[in-house]
Image (cartoon, rainbow, N blue to C red; front, top):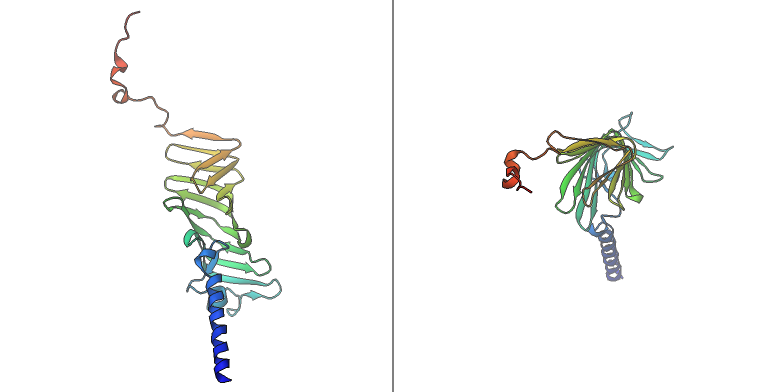
Length: 226
């Protein structure tokens, strides 16, 4: 009887390990962002000291079913490869819908195909985990290399891999700068699209006629007489 009971416990433990491995495997990392805290634990393993609460003991609001977290990191991956990483000074997780409100978000997006980094910062944000979307508001600033876009609202859609600034925004690069009613930054090809009331100002070096040293050798030859 004891042998049968022991065998049954072993089978149950193995089953539990298999289920755990399936749920937390990298192949499922693209389903929704994973959350890590300052010490690398998941929210359920947080120390009380890591929670933001006026009483210093608990930040769980039973009435609105929310939990406040401090110094967390969210990562989004797909097939074992990281898509983006978000770090924030504090956050509030709403248990009723699983969305996360973040303060001072700092996001790093890894662009295809060579994982070139794109950085986003803002004052506030909202992570919609179930839809693979997020919104950043107030002093939104995006930069990648020497290109940048600034505005007051950013909406990211994970299904299309696009960052959209739907309000008046400003963009710049080494060759030009301008503004538009709407700006879309596509992650897959890193192209920036400006729509509506577009104003573009070229830098002094762009659009200039070639200097004499750059002109073809025959540029100064006298044309033949008719």
